[in-house]
Image 1: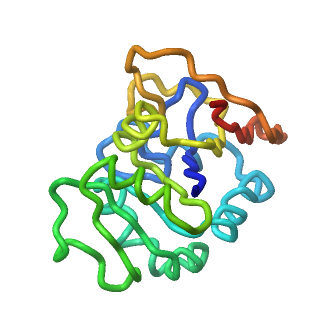
Image 2: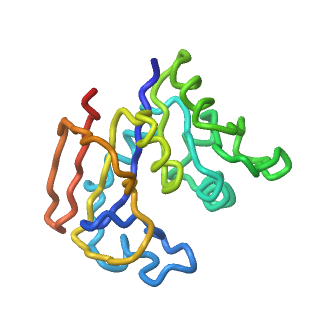
Length: 190
């Protein structure tokens, strides 16, 4: 079985919306405008590229990343990985031609089948709505979080608000950086 990893930049109050400057959000770009940049705090992002075998995205995140990431040197490894987009509306003609192999999955059942197959870890970037569904379906195995010392208030949250049984997490790696950023890697306890 493949490991499904959700990775996100989040504020202390759980907001994940528009960390890189995407338009339409009041606090857009909060990761770089509000906290001093320390390269060592982002080592986890390089490790994710080395260790991931596939990328899983929701449609909105795919449409935000696919015009930008293929040409960014810091995301060069992602060009070679298979990508999966979970969407009921995206069509083949909506896929980026310059970002390599991309498959559209139409349901969480198809994600579950992908997890059951052979291969290495699958990484989920962004994708708030998809993360909620994956969590509620019990499909996430691990979280890679960079928690920023900010309270943003309104905004899309990483975690689902579904009323469900407690889900226990085990902290497997943690580091605090001088700028207040915290790396938290947590496994979902089954």
